[in-house]
Length: 265
Image (cartoon, rainbow, N blue to C red; front, side, top):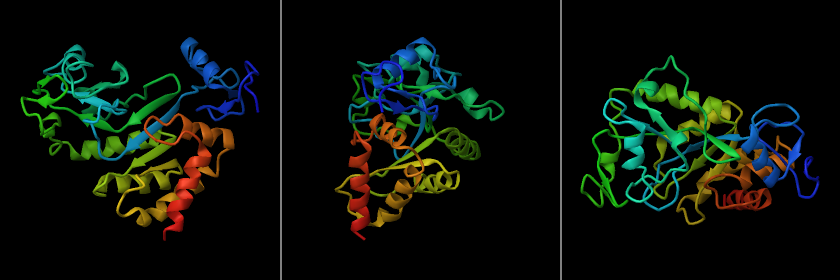
């Protein structure tokens, strides 16, 4: 199944989900021009929701939306402090990941879907950051080199808003990905998986082979494979290949790992 544009490379089904196949190179060229499928006219970027506890201190780019306090900071302030490539603690793909706090709490206003590269976009979740933080050289928050808790703003007064926003962001995604942390205590993310399952989303399980409770995730593995089985091979292959955090680069490798988890039970 060759690319319908260049016919010189293997073609994938893009985020528009129509039958038009494009290779990676042609997909990026289309996004550079207008991000519209030549056949159906829809965006070819796949929208992901990346559930799970957020890990910010491993040097990788954070594929989340950052909600900043626009009463105290401007977009440039955030980019120059926490999101600075040299001095910040959050390494972003681009500035589109920033969202104003005033927009986040205004639930009459829909949250945007943000592109993080030429092939995928992110619907959520969000990191709500404290407007009083100061960062230095990517290793300290307010002078503390070990505790990143001050990076996050308390959500105690907006819990209902956060709950509503999370559902909205999951509704907008096509692919729901759950990253399980080593302590297996991402409890809200587990409930989000159930909601995504009920909404018939494509489900991706991102869990280490060294997780002490790996065999207990057999139903997650089964539900993930069942959701992917509804798609064409080129579509599910593209979802795995272009996932922003998954270590697997092709569907067959991912399927083999899910089958391994199933065999443990």
